[in-house]
Amino acid sequence: MSHGFTRDDLERVARLARLQLDDSELALFARLVAGILDYAEQIQRVDTAGVEPTAHAPGSAGPMRDDRVVASLPRQEALAAAPDADRSAGLFKVPRVIG
Image (cartoon, rainbow, N blue to C red; front, top):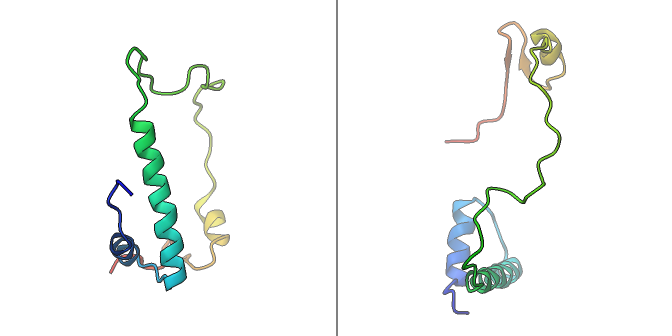
């Protein structure tokens, strides 16, 4: 492994992502991430001299439509489909994800 990625690195990333991984998962994912990093190193060695940079693959842009102003879904109708909404305030409620 020339990339230097270790199981300790994976444990740190898992902790930051709030993932609880057991020993077998840590071993599996460490091996998978190491393989991905090895492949990325391989790609970095490809000689791209003379290859014009592009923002996207040529010809990949699909047909474009004109932008048009259209009426949106009425707020009460959208809130009616929400599992936990404060309809009187006109707000969606979502679980807290930070702190």
